[in-house]
Length: 71
Image 1 (cartoon, rainbow, N blue to C red):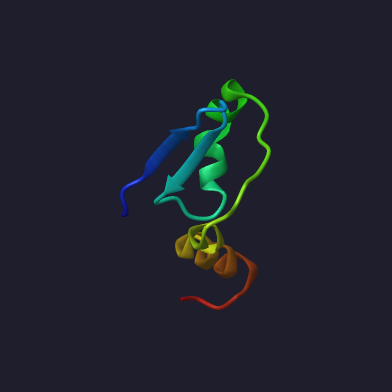
Image 2 (image 1 turned 60 degrees about the vertical axis):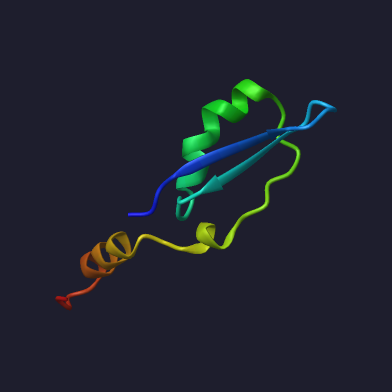
């Protein structure tokens, strides 16, 4: 399991730049939701390639539940 990291860069004009590493899918949104609410309005979100990786175990469970094929 990869290390999960939240990095913050605070610019002189008050902007906060957040970088999230080690999360897959939408789990990064859940991990940062409270922090983002506390910091204020989010103006830009850029997804990394990790955001497009889904949990393979969850996908297999869902596929197994929806079909009569056993893996």
